[in-house]
Figure 1: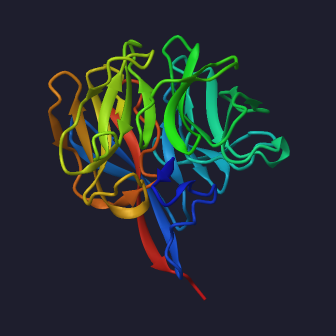
Figure 2: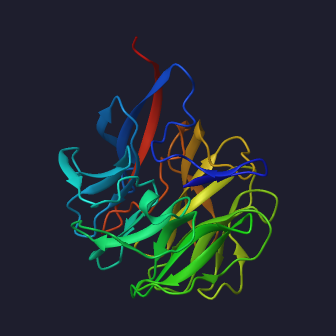
Length: 308
């Protein structure tokens, strides 16, 4: 989603190119990790920049964003076409489906609104003209309650990024976190009892959880990595997270060494799933588990010299 810091609390542009070194272009590869075999399979590799796979609730496709648009990819890498989003054409990498699969939530700027920064919209899962939910920007969607009544998101208000909640029919936003520093990546557990999020409140980016009203905040990871985005497995017992090898403070940049790990939500034990690879922003920003919880999708990156 965003890569906040004391110097700059700015979201990556919808093009995704603002952190790519000069003279370089990106190769993106879409991978599926199988939990049982503990192996990743590359299903799509292209000489362009795409990000943030979701897995549809019916299992028929993955949804990625690229150049402000949303695209459907089959689980074996077939390109299934664009998902229509009407006049909203600057989608960033914060999007995902409701638990029942009927609604898609997207984050995008909308120049016609007169509101600066990313806003949150909802649209039917097959696409259409989105309905705007947030009236302030920047706002970045991250999760939905199991009953579909409440969404949670990260937003900058008064120069601080916090977690907010809002009725999915629209209305006032409710601030759930009040600590100094970045709170980000909120996501409900399948039983609705907790919201997991990443926070810098300890002086290191770690995974935390809280009750849906924002109470009883509890730290879940304790190490020297910068760890983001706890995506809860459908069984409600584990979460896949992304960890930067080197401390990134409050930043979530593109183009660094990272690895994916599995967090046990009961014991708080954490284990490596992948080796280190080149990734970060765009790798696994949003929920990407298969419906049966046996696999999840993510993106790896490479750089190449731009062709003259």
